[in-house]
Image 1 (cartoon, one colour):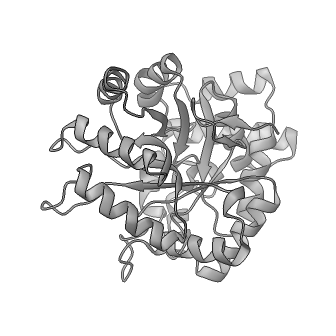
Image 2 (tube, helix red, strand yellow):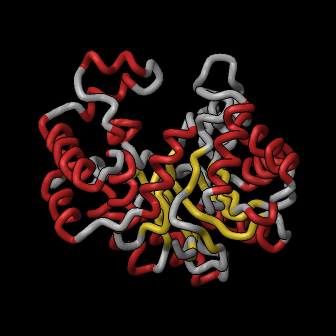
Length: 317
């Protein structure tokens, strides 16, 4: 397992990121600590969270995931060994502008307090803000990098057109550029990324980290019929989107390869992402040590050419 760069920055990671959206949502702090400990013990270092995680859960105001990660970093005293990612700007308040200078600077300070650190390795614009000039956003990030609060920046849920304009502005005015794009990408959800974002990222030397890497759990093989939806009240709702002829064809191909390689279906789905050109790290969450073992195994698994071909055919769109 070799380290690679998140983009053109000097941030080096192993090819897997641990998603922090479940911390304080579907698992408590003690379980989160066990998952984090095992992830690092397995040789990985990229931990991904966001300031909103997980404000969709009843009683969760957001910021809980960051707080748990901050408590873990403090107790383990390993901040320098971690590449830490958090995000800003996914706000629904019409009176707030998620990529404005004031919002970013205030939100960053709050994230730093919760995480118990004085810098973020990769700070991500969580989604576009059409009400704020892109120049203002990029200049703000550049100032935060000069202040030492942020080492590198990236973007999630941004169009190829916006990303290209951002790169043009960064080149013209000397702003820091987006070094990483976090994209909704997995063996089922391929089309949008491969047709638009992938060509841009490859041409611009921008690293890709994927979210929903297991298609909200569908690519774990856990959901194969409507009766399986009840296995997870938080995830099962989304399975009706995947449970169709194409989804079942993908699972059948994964099952066949999993049987021959004696690995889990989820491991193969992660390995497929690791094999894709431009993807520097799939991001996946885990709520148990068994789930964590599946995704870490996948990050180390090298698929054969015929296996990759079989999966490409099964997931063709």
